[in-house]
Image 1 (cartoon, rainbow, N blue to C red):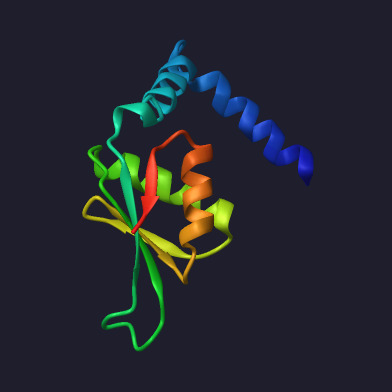
Image 2 (cartoon, one colour):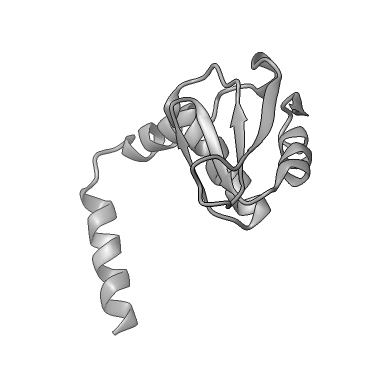
Length: 115
């Protein structure tokens, strides 16, 4: 059974036009071509309003596009082991994770401060 899907995969690879793999690799590399040093300082805020008493950590101050913010949010959520989202140039992390978010952002090369 295992050999069937591997054989099918090899057949599909043979069908792809030459250079297709290189184009895909360039697109993936281009999506992560942003430089943390080009961003201004990020602000990390704790918010409890309209959340039924539950805390949320908000990271704002991004000047890049929404796709890059979503990529950074994914990395942060993975490092912090928590849920969250990225919308409107801001990242929302569930819970009071201000200090952990600060150290994670610094390790990614960003300048940040807790407000």
